[in-house]
Image 1 (tube, one colour):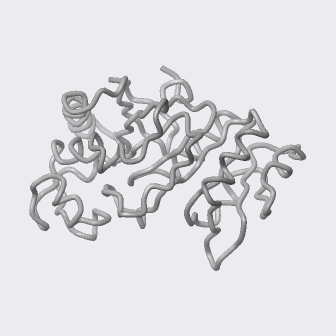
Image 2: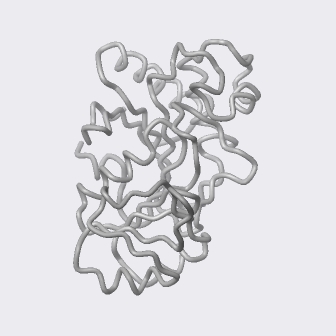
Length: 237
C-alpha cells in the first residue's frame, strides 16, 4: 500500500508520539505535494522541508494565496522553533480549505518512544486521522530519559519499572491505550499506529510483534511499518 493511502493522509492528519513525527509529516507533505504542514504545539524550524513557511495569524489566507507547495503555516517564531496554533484555528482552517492539513500535535524531544502528558495531545476536533508513532529502535533500550519521553508515565501504563528494558508489548500497550497513543482521538477519526525505523530484518520482526500486540488491544484497522526517513512503507498489518 502506498505511503499516503496507508496512513490515511487526507483531510486533517495529526501525528503524535515519538520516533519520527516530523519525518512523517515532511515525507507526507512532499509525497502529497499540495499540502499544508502546521502544528498545535511548538515545532522546530522546518523551512528547508517545504517550499515556503508563512508566519501568519491568518493561515487560511496564506493557504488560499499559496502558489508553491507544500506550504508551512505557523503563528510565530520563538528562537529556534515556531509556536503552534490553538486547535480552534486548525478547525477554522479546515473549514476554509480542502488542502490536506498535516499537524504536529505533541512533543517528544527527539526520543524514540513516549506517553502523552496531561495536556497532550493537542488534537483539533476536526481531525480525520491520528497517527501515533513509535520507533522500533526503542525495544531493548532502557526505559529512561535517554530513549523515552516521560518514562515514568510509560512505566505507569505498562507495569515496567524505570530502567527496565523496553519491550514490544510495552510499546503496543502505550500505542493502543486511551491514555497513550489513542488519547483524545476525536469520535469519527481513524487512528493508524505507525512503527517507524524498520531498517532491517531484526527491526521488522520487532515491529511485527508490536503490530500483533496492538491488534490484540485496540480495534484499529491497521498498523503501518515504515522507514519514514526513506518515505517507504515496509508493510501494512
